[in-house]
Amino acid sequence: MAFFTHRVSRSFSSSAVRSVVIKNVMVIGGGQMGAGIAQVAASTGHSVTLVDMSEDILKKSVKGIEGSLKRVVKKKFADKPEAGEEFVQKILQNVSICTDPAAAVPSSDLVLEAIVENLKVKQDLFSRLDKLAPA
Image (cartoon, rainbow, N blue to C red; front, top):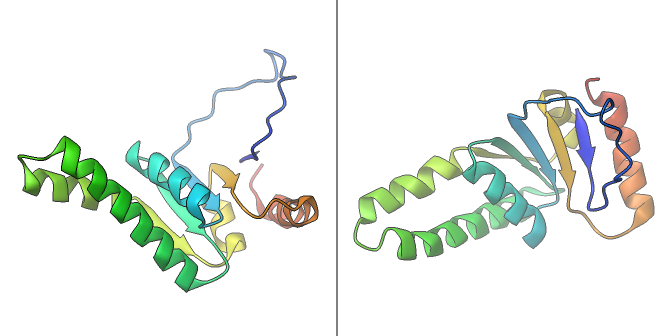
């Protein structure tokens, strides 16, 4: 399990770095940044679980991702609308939503947070998730 926030330490020694295959990504925070991160990860073939406090926020996030993908389709698939729709659906199939981060942590290879910029809230979140995360 790897946890990343927007600040990453650069003090890794070469012996401390190991190769990790990341298949399942959990993005905590369904706002603009979290939805964007989820879209990029899903676009690269990763299975993404987008987590936020309410279903309404998550539905809005997925709608935003779909809208963003449709803007890509207009440029990339202007003369192939069927291929464009297939492109959108393929990426959206990689995104699932969840309101309970504890439920998604055990199956996640990478956890990214995109929540409110409040250190205490972030520390509390990672403290809870660290107890549930696989080694």
